[in-house]
Length: 310
Figure (cartoon, rainbow, N blue to C red):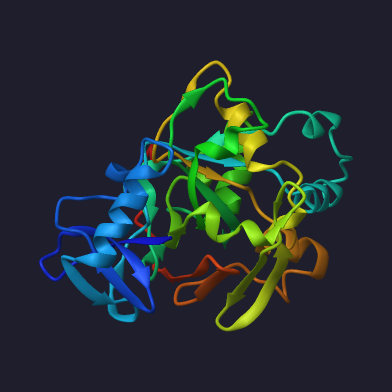
């Protein structure tokens, strides 16, 4: 199943099943988040209703899409691709930390800053070094605590493309203070264009992930290319770590972290900033993951910055 959330002509948030380029919409008031919470039976039942008797039918190409879950309870972003971590550390003169191979670390991002496809993303306040990050996100379908890595993936409702927008100069200053990323990250996270249920991906299974090509372009020029199969930690391992001593809940978003070559920071460290400059107002960033679709956003004008101490 492929699900989207969208805004209808009256401005209401709606959800529907994608089939043959059309959205077969559920009645107003039903949300994708409201269909989660079990092992997928609610989603399957809703898909059957949407297929047999849709409340509305909307062309996917003309719909105003939102993030699949526009208001997730939490957003956790991991750091799970070795190539990205290794390259960034090498360029700072650092070896890989042995703990990285034992701890699938993450940070909490801002659920209030989640945006969807085609949204304009203002440059973070005070930043001159705007960047994208090419990722895949899992959305939790069934809550739980202290999950076992071997079966934690059964708690996933589906996957989507994720852009973890980053203000590198702000992030760099914050993290020198042993905190962060904080304001270097929490101004925008884009998700979309649709939520794809795990059954749609099983034939692409490779080891502990899926062999799905991931690419990023800026103004039509390819910048990034990798496979989700290159990920070091499985989503099951990441979910299990996230749930240690606490809970994950339906609608929670779990990001993979940046794939190898998946951001300007990494590319500029290897190939130079002249070839890969920071994003500027008007740049169009398209992140594509095979079977999950293309997440397109445009960089907007800088957000207003008021000094903390004039």
